[in-house]
Image 1 (cartoon, each protein chain N blue to C red):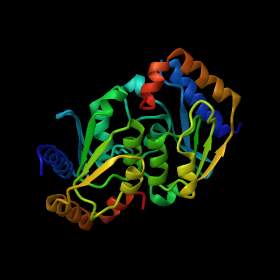
Image 2 (cartoon, rainbow over the protein chains, first blue to last red; image 1 turned 60 degrees about the vertical axis):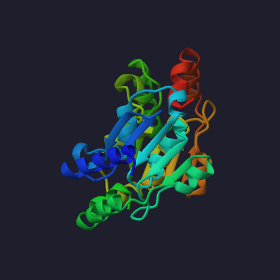
Image 3 (cartoon, rainbow over the protein chains, first blue to last red; image 1 turned 90 degrees about the vertical axis):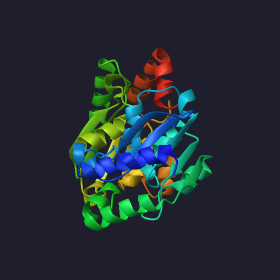
Image 4 (cartoon, chains in turn red, brown; image 1 turned 30 degrees about the horizontal axis):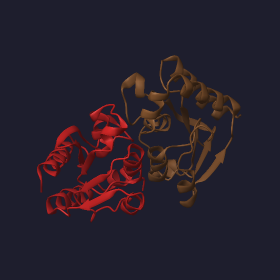
Amino acid sequence: MDKYMQAALEEARQGLTEGGIPIGSVLVHRGRILGRGHNRRVQSGSTVLHGEMDALENAGRQAASVYRDCVLYTTLSPCPMCSGAILLYGIPKVVVGENRTFMGEEELLRSRGVEVEIIQSEECIELMTGFIEASPELWNEDIGE
Amino acid sequence: MDKYMQAALEEARQGLTEGGIPIGSVLVHRGRILGRGHNRRVQSGSTVLHGEMDALENAGRQAASVYRDCVLYTTLSPCPMCSGAILLYGIPKVVVGENRTFMGEEELLRSRGVEVEIIQSEECIELMTGFIEASPELWNEDIGE
């Protein structure tokens, strides 16, 4: 696991410490982390701040040319909303910690030319598996089920 | 224009009054407005709070069964991010003020079973046309271009 996925995993663990849903993300531009974040459903009552969205929000307003030179790291396969944000901003590459506990819109992203790399990290899988077992209702709410 | 699109248009105009991007939205559950909002890029420096996202955020945490009985009204055709949020939460119907100044992911939504109704409101078209002419760079930033 490289230092960017490690940072995303730290965000996810921070979320769990806060009583939240343990999904984290970092937006990286030419090797520098522009924004980092984690799911805020519990902490802020937010329905839109998934981990990836929180990282994008914390990165602040950027020119299209910046996004087009970014890589988004996320501990979990991106849901339709986060995948849509990736498409909106034209982020060309997404590195995904795991897609075993949830399969997002990877095929849609690939069909639009986004490179999607799956790490399949045991640490990410264990973190989500433990959370889903402990809080199935909260998890279902987060994915609209 | 029904009262829900009128409310979305009021949100859009409020956004313009604040110096922001004039796109508004309301989330309606069985005839009651659960949440309303408008684009917050300028006002909050937000990259994720498009009008539809702001309405979803302001509606607060809801059960999947609630979203599945909602209609989302938006003054402008929903971008990939907002369309993804509609898919995530399983909102079955979207009413769009206009798609002349921007064509969002209507085909993706329809391909996933979402009903998309286009009003093609002259008021909505005029509002966006005037804004885009006055602030083309801000508009391009909002749609990742």
